[in-house]
Length: 110
Image 1 (cartoon, one colour):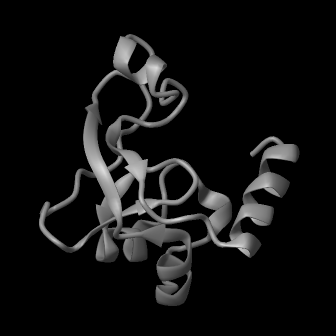
Image 2: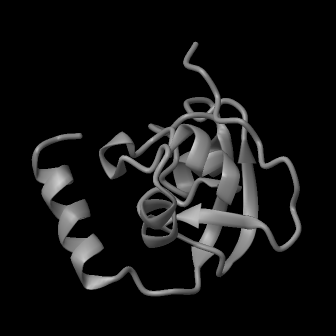
């Protein structure tokens, strides 16, 4: 079984969601370990990168324990991601430069 992302240590105003996969963690968790699904963002130990690649503006949360067996994970297109807490919707637009980076990484198959 794959390792799960650490759940956010608090669910108040300090959580953020990854712009690509919508994984929710605190700013410090993204800073310490990066995004468990999007290693190409290289957020670990880079505060500017965490701020650029995540957003505090999201709606709803879905906690996924077993993505391959969960109908909700399949419906939300989370089945191939690590277990964790995910935003249902991002309220911010992905910045243009970041959108290009995401598209490029998807073409390379990461």
